[in-house]
Length: 586
Image (cartoon, rainbow, N blue to C red):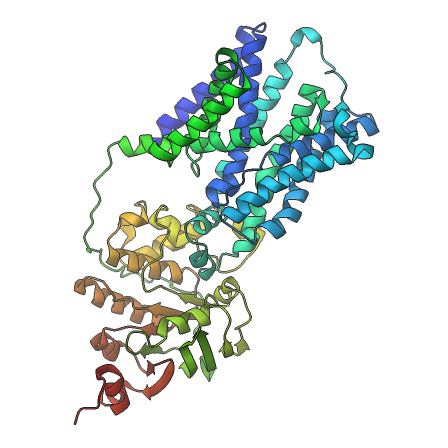
C-alpha cells in the first residue's frame, strides 16, 4: 500500500474517534468500550517495543499498568493530590522498575525470559496483598471521584486514553526510525551478529524494556482514577497481559500498525463474548481459540498476511551488480596509520571443544595496512579463530592484542567500536530489513545522540548509500536483504562492516558460494578499501584469489600455524602441500 494512502486512512480514523463523543455525548457504553480498547492498544504498542522490535517476549507486561496504578493510588491518598497529577510520575516509576528488573532478567532469553515475566507479574500481585501498610492489602485503595460534572461522565477519560494511545504510537514510530530501532530489530534477527557490528545488545534491551513501560505506567495512573478503586487481583491480572499480547500478535508483532489494529479487534471480540457469549468463561475460550488460529494460520499476524497478498514489484535475483562509483568515496575517515608493528597479534591461543583442540597454540601477527590471508584445510580452526578474535567464541587461553591493547576480555561490541569488523562464512544479514537499514545498522560508537539519529535519513543514511554505491548495489537500497542473491548479500555484508570505519576487517570466505563473475568485484572492493588504510585478514579457499590478492599468507592446520610468508613461498611449502594433500609430493 502507498504510504500516503495509509496515512490518509489513519488520519480519517483518528478524526472519527475524536468526533465520537461529540456526535453522541450520551453514548456512554460505546465510549467506554472504545476507551478500554485504547487502553489495550497503549499496552500492545508499548509491548511491541521490547517483544516486537527486539524479539523478547514478555507475558507479564501488564505489571507496569499495575505499578502505575498503585503508584498513583498510594501517593494520591497520602499526599491528597489528584491521581492525574501523578500520572507522569507513575510512568517514571514504571521505567525505574523496568531498568532494575531488566538488568537481571534480560540476561536470559527464550522460554526462560517468558516465565520470568509471568513470575514478575505474580510477584507484584503477592506484594500488593502482603504489604497492607503500603497498599491496604486485599481491601484495596479507594480513590476520589472525578472532579468534573457527572453529566460529562467518561468523556474526559475517553480523550485521555485516546491521547495516550496517539503519543505511544508516535513514540513507537520514532523509535523504529532511529538507529536505536534498527538495532533492536537487528537483535531480534540475530543477536550475535548485532553484537559483532557494534550494537551493545544488553544496553539496547534494557533501554527497550524501559521504553516499553513508560506509557503503560502513565495509563495505569489514569486507569486507577477511571476505576476509583484498586485491588491486587485487578491491578496485576494475567488475563490483561494475555489480552495485550494477543492484540499485538493478531495485528502483527514487530509492525507499527499491527498492535493498534489487533488491540481493537481483540477488545471488541472480548466485549462481544462477554455480552453475548455468557461472560468471562466465553472470553477465555475465545482467547484460546484466537491464539490457536493465529499460530496455525497467521503466525506473523493480520497485517503481514495482507501485505503478502498485495502485488509486488519483481526483483532481479541475479548476481548482477552495478558499476563501482568512480567519484571519490570515503570508505573510512580514519587517517592512514603511520605506526609500526602489527595491528593484530595472536599469542599462543588455545580453544578446545571437549577433547577436540580447534585452535592449538596459534600465534600470528597481522601487519598494518596489509591484506593478509589465513588459509588451511576444512576443520583447521580458521573460523573458530575468527570467533575468538571478535569475542563470540567463548572462553579460551592465550592473548589477543589489537592496536597495542589486549582485547580478549572485551565484549564483542566493544571490539567493534575499537575498529574490528568481520563478515561471516554464511552471510548473516538481517533478512527482514531493507538493504539500506542493514548497512546503516552498525554502531561505531555509543552515544545518546547516535541512538536518536535517523536510521534511513541524514548523514548516516547518506554514508550508507555511498558504501552501497561503492560495492555496486546502490539501486537495491529499498529491497529486503533476504530477497537478494547470495553474492549480492556478500557485498552488502561487506558494505555493512565498512560502515563501522574499521581498522581491521576479518573476511570469512568472501568468495565462497559466489558467482565467479562477482569474485573479481569482491577483490576490487577489498583492494580499494585497503588503499584507504583498512587492513584485511581473509579466510578463503579460492587459492588463486588468495595468491593474487594477499601478502602475507598464514597457513593453519589442526589449529596450529604451520607456515607463513609471501604467496610465492607458501605455494611451494612442503608442510602446506602435506596439509592440503595429505602427503608431500616427490
